[in-house]
Image (cartoon, rainbow, N blue to C red; front, top):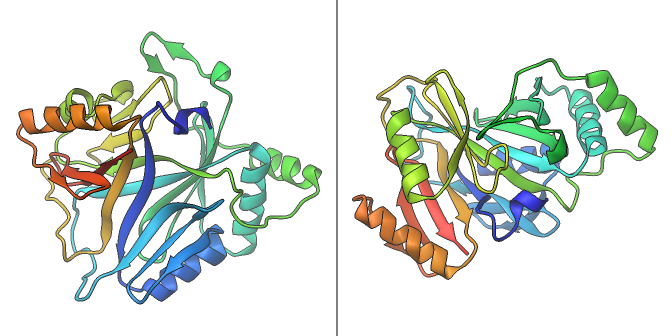
Length: 283
């Protein structure tokens, strides 16, 4: 998982505000296959290989989303191999999950939603040597996936699905934003990502060190949409893991120079992008 370790900046953990903590823990444990690493009356941390990748927070008085907001389009769980993707495809099919799928050229991906409508991608990367770069942009597509091939490679391996592999990481996050140009300026000039793909003024994909994307941004919910209110269920925050304290301080200074608010919380600095998506910067 070269693109998800230091010195590369990558997404570490996603935090969701949830209406039904018990039900959501059961879904992510039994359907998605995460380990439950921590559990209390109002929160739970789930992940793989002892790593926390998803925090669920039950918030008193939380309400369902009632309109289109900025926030989560999906978070993406990266598996270590094609066999692993085939195994979870079989598992999800057996569980009756409603799935979408795509071959993105750089990766193969499955899509589903949790019981509260949060989007989930589960994918495996092709080798970086197979990615097709045109200058500074990587070729991506939305082609049909070879589901039969995935099943065949999983069945040929001779081992059944046993939950998320220990090497699983949070591969990327894809966000609804209100203004694509403002979001681009923030993520490129403040957070030091680079644009690696664009989609007709509707979506941008950004990365560090030439990954196909650590961050996706889109305006498919509409331009000018409001930030997700604190009292609405959905994305609470996501973390960006930075190379070292020096880089965190440099980014914090850039954020403040651009007029962004930054709060210090000991182990992380918290800010928000121009659409109100909360980001925790950690090392």
